[in-house]
Image (cartoon, rainbow, N blue to C red):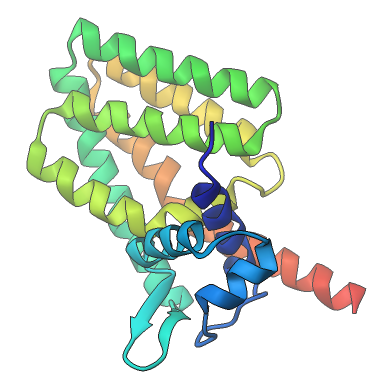
Length: 220
């Protein structure tokens, strides 16, 4: 059962990333509660989650406002994320146990079910589990901490890029390559597959925003 605050977070994420809320816009609890027909409590929880991901900032005397992350910084963040995830995959291939391998396989199968049902939101959540299982299989707590910190900042962008045409299919196929490399203990192949998988997300996200912007201009 998805919490109401999580639903509100997802809706606000999409509105921010597609430009319905612009950098610097204030997100007032009372206004949002009236807009979505809810109490202020789930709104407050959603804003806290958005603040943790870096999509909004809390400024003195202004409250919650939409943050501005330029395309250059976003691409730099994805570059670093790709290297951190590649390290996790490399270590997983070297250190994976039968139990860890089972969990990775189960997470991959769950992604497959979401892919077959064409459920983008379900795939996003199962995708997060798949990556988490690989991080845990690498058994480097400091690396996991660093990867998860940046992953939280990039969650909205990773979620949105899955809406690009055929992206879920490609993502699932890339997961297959990563999981297979880990299973056979090929650390180099696992790292390379993961680096390519994560590294291209930033570019795909920018491509998606460009297509959405073009569609909006055509409608107007």
